[in-house]
Image (tube, rainbow, N blue to C red; front, side, top):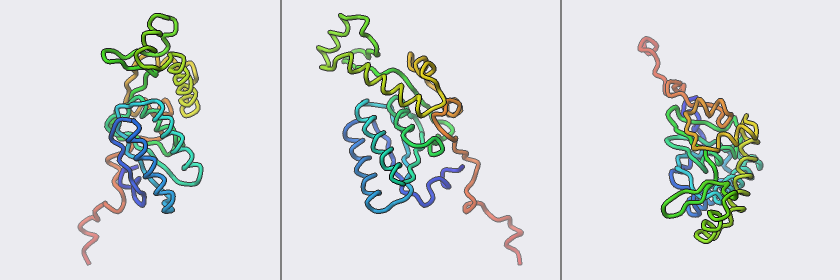
Amino acid sequence: MHLSTLIKGSSVFDFSSQVDESSVATLRQWLMKQCQAGTKKVVIMLSTVGGNAYEAFGAYDTIQALAASGMEIRIVATGRCMSAGTLIITAVEQKFRHATPNARLLTHCVGITTDDQRIECPVSSNPELARAVQDYTGMPIVEACALQDRLIELLVAGTHLSREEVFVLLRKESYFWPDKALEYGLIGSILDPNDVAPSSKKRPWYKWRR
């Protein structure tokens, strides 16, 4: 499918920012307005480096709720769809998830970022580190691990991967192209730049002759 075909007749939202309280609130407000206006089809162009896990879960729940109400929501991963972005894209049915050919995707563990390092969950086996992180961030390690458990559950439900396969994927920073995302079941199709929309195809010169 060509992008122009995908967005035809749809309202489009460009989500090109970090996943945080502000960006997710903007997305939520836009989706609510579309719902109130009776819009039937929307497309979210998603390009993000990731961000806050809580806000990602909030975006996921909002998109799922509106999709369940009958709104057709499609998400297109483009540029970079990383970390929290790979969760958000699974909020819709697989057939409504797409990626542009050169999109770059990334999955990894839920982590806590301090000034000088990112600490991946779980670290509960190291009590000293756990206490240091909790003192610095105010977030207990058990909470970070709870977030990761829920992330794993949602990725298992939204892909072709088993819990064990998702766990292996999250153990390190896993970068991949759309063909691998398609194999995982993270997306349903890769948009084809050569599949020109019918309305934009030029008629052969001889068809114009009388």
